[in-house]
Length: 436
Image (cartoon, rainbow, N blue to C red):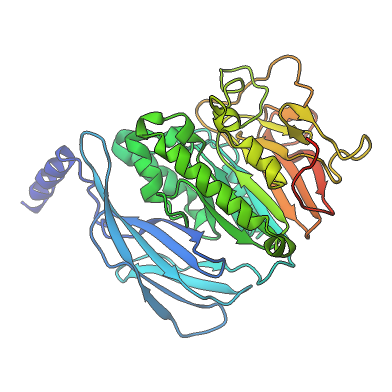
């Protein structure tokens, strides 16, 4: 009789679109992000029932656990089944810097296994190490095994995912998003996973992105900034220029916010403290791929009828590096502004460059494969590759950044996981670009 009852209940729940599992209160899809500062760590996770939002944590060397309560919000997928889940957020505030913590999400019997993370060092004088990539899906996520190995070896302090997740998070009534977030957990539950939206997040007004990720931005996480070490990072949404059905007001709001944020970051006091200004967003201002029109329609660069274009702000406030994805490839430019190259010198183009450097890194791996390039590279294109891979970044100090691209498959003459491109960006003076 009990077996028949279970079968009946399973059939009813499946018909109603409810996930049937004895662990429906079990925390899953656990991931971290920075809060308002780098020693505030936000823990985000999902359950499929309304449970207590709680995290227990302790310093790695201590025995006594501290308990922090948070809040949850029901998120209903926009598909036909209106499938719900509860997304929980707890902020661990004012943690000790450069310290490893153990933490457990939820309460027994529905709690996570013990997890851990390490807070970054205090101040600006330390080497910031980052994995950077975009366009990674549930299927064909070629870079994931290599990233997991890197994270296990503690090679990074944070990750930047530059748009396009899961392919797509809304598919199968949101189940693809759930699977992707489960897949990310070994990475994102161990170190801050900082993001920006891409075009594949557009469904239901970007609701999967805005609900699943906890970035410090006020505009539904679409744009925000944060400081880490000697770097001021700025995350923007390129999608506000392309999905105008959600309102041109977002274009204007982001432009005005960005201008104010850049002015503050480029002030004399702040630039002396954190000289590097790095912006990242999904669709590139410059690329030389041949797959579609994206490399000839860069609204983020030019704006609409010359209004609200962002490239002039890069010049005005001396942005050092701009990171993009969207194209399923890797491409590095020479120092570049308005389609013109402004190298530091012929022998050392990236030493004291006279314009921002652009980097496209969208080949982490997804069901759409990688993208080809036009036959002849543009004059501003310094290196490009269609191999699957991801980018490693290290800001060594206030003057030197080292960047390398790792190929994970099909690298000509190189084994999987080998570095196929690298360069040093050297700037002794961080300031607006004059004379361009």
